[in-house]
Length: 201
Image 1 (cartoon, helix red, strand yellow):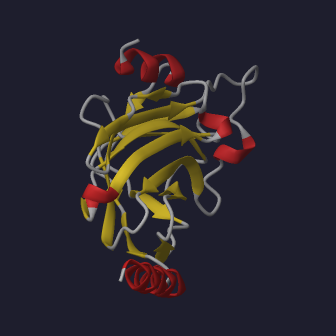
Image 2 (cartoon, rainbow, N blue to C red; image 1 turned 30 degrees about the vertical axis):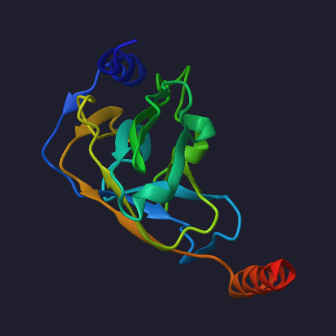
């Protein structure tokens, strides 16, 4: 199904409005990941906004840089409250993700906004899982970007006015993760190599 149609269906009748201040950030990223074995780590994608009361829906993609050659897969999943409008376009290779659309149906009083979509202190809208190869080293930079196929980046619902507000050109966040095999594992690998070398002699 076309993403524009999905967003439209999830949002209902939405009104454009003057630009507001909002951001999409990566939270929970580990500063260092032990890559002794093939490893998967997960980060949250979080919306903050200075207007409205709830996140109605939105879309984003991931454009990674740095040690992208060691990334095996990037998975994305909408938060439970936002899964009604989920459209996942999947891993693009090279540490990138093609895009994720997320959202909910809001139609008061029959379908009020989900409690977990409240903008009180930041709203988790999705999670990303990144799988990296065993023995990987380097710095992996995760950069959220606008989804080029989506008609807007974010939609905010205001419970007081009952209005929807579509947004583009917000602030997109990033995070850097150091990929380092555990020193003890490297030492064991080195000792194993020495023992194997002596046995061959």
